[in-house]
Image (cartoon, chains in turn purple, orange, green, red):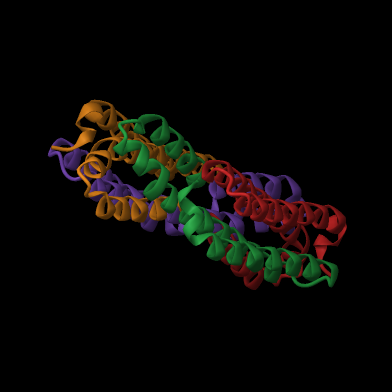
Length: 90
Length: 90
Length: 90
Length: 90
């Protein structure tokens, strides 16, 4: 059982919204809309994806990582967390 | 008519793939999969969205912006391009 | 002669400031200051460096790239510009 | 006493190097070097600054944050850590 369970509904809602945005961008391309407007939507998707990632990192740290640290078994979890942060700050 | 027409099919294919990834992430959350695995998928979506954005910036520069510059009317288009790049480098 | 000449003084001033910030961070580390405060300074340096980069991309596009496009020789310059943007959006 | 003490020398060495790169970029501008070459150096500074930040986040998490969690006082430190990560992923 993982700590992100608590905001499962919220995460799913935000991902549903991102899915809708992606579909909207496809429609914009099919309708030959102006590139700059499409780029603005893509930037919004990138930012929203980043935000969902940060929420997950947050609940993962408060849940799994904190528990592991309390049980004296934090180092593997911290390494894993750092790897994820490294990928997200690129 | 905009310059990204040429790779419309390619852009749509990549966006379809991102849409599938987003749906996959929703399924992972519903199945209570490990946060770190979900985060890896989110980072992949972020990177793929960025790449689609760069492709659009590329064809927009080669098309609309280049044409405007040739016609002596580049400054507005360059301003717009810079604004888009600014948003994407954030 | 390159197009960024015009704001040479401004660029140098901003780089001098970043240099000062980097030295300030070294001092903070020597004085064992709190990591979170040091990280805030590092984030400021990262953002300031990004901004200087965007200014250079801007004047490069308005100068070298625009000139090359007008002379019918834009493609190599646009490729180069895209490569730089790619590195900065990572 | 903070946890980053251990790699103080390494951090200082890397910041000295970044300081040298910033000075090198100033010299390139004074010598009217090609914008694209200067941008490559700026991107290197941005990446190096990011890496120093990640190292600090790493040792901060292993030190201060882990200790606070063990002592049952982790929530404030985790909030602070998340805020720093948020700034760095922007």
